[in-house]
Image (cartoon, rainbow, N blue to C red):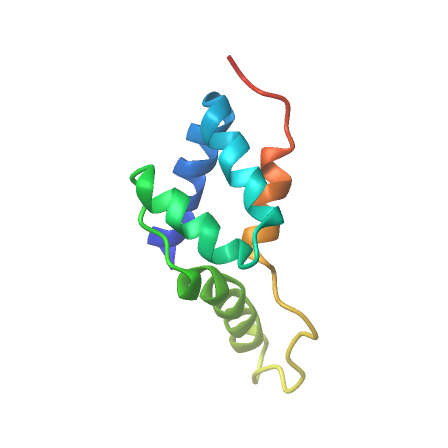
Length: 97
């Protein structure tokens, strides 16, 4: 999962410096399948990310937190971090030049 986190961070950095990429990624929120649209744009920009990887980011974090609890956590989290939504929140920062 380290690769996907690194790739998402690189994409975020690129989008914060490229208004067209930033706009295209933000516009995915209005698509019928936002995560698929997001991944297609990411791949076109040179950042290979799949929808499955976006889902897996939150799942792996939750699993690791449960395993790190002494004896295991019998009560997994009610929700998972949403990598797509977190990414878009990061794009809401002012543009850097």
